[in-house]
Amino acid sequence: MNLALNFGLHHKGFAINAFAFSLFFFCAPTDGRAQTTIPTPAPCTVQEGFAPSQDATSATITSLVTQIRQSSYPQLAPIDLRVKTFHSNADYFQTRLSLSRFVLLRRMRYFVEVNLDLFSRQAPAQGVCAILAHELVHVASLSQGNRLRRFGLVRLISKGFSRKFERRTDLEAIHLGYGDGLKAYRAWVYANIPSASLVEKRKRYFSPEEISSLQEGLKRNPELLAYWRKHVPLSLPEITSSPGYSH
Image 1 (tube, one colour):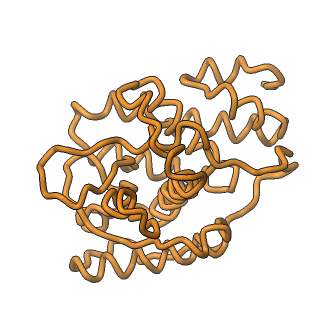
Image 2 (cartoon, helix red, strand yellow):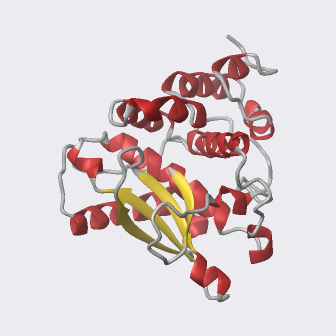
């Protein structure tokens, strides 16, 4: 779920969070109107407990990305989007763009990267689909605007901005109907990362409890979506105390 730039260089630990490149152009519906109901995503299927090889992992995720892109993100059809793998003990997905293509003014290429441990640790299928939807929100955001606007490094080191950016990304996925899957994924992640990483994960992304409150609020008052896009909630009390939230 991390955003980073792909430098094309194997320099360990040297990556820049690409959320800064989306500083001025977060992807959202152009007409600004809230839907009266949260849609149900098209079926996204992956075999539970599947423990594939690296090639099989890429093929599986590529298939899922294609399903989700066609059903929920048709605007991404012309985007050059690839699947790669990486290793981590705390992250299972990340979205990257190619810096070399960015600098050389070539057609942009984006990557959704998947941790090889995802399936061997039996990630929930619904959760995998939902977090891929989250990653595609990142791709949609990164693919908007010109290159100069993408080079917005002003808030590169701002953890507060990172939290708002990731939670706003969650919100868009929830709006598209992937809330239940995100809850399943977060519950699984909490049990499959080092305890030292758990506090930061809970801060940066909506927890299952917060997602349930967001879903309930949107069900009762769809206009809350516009408010939360501008005022991203950073805690459960901020969700339930939002203007127009009914208990």
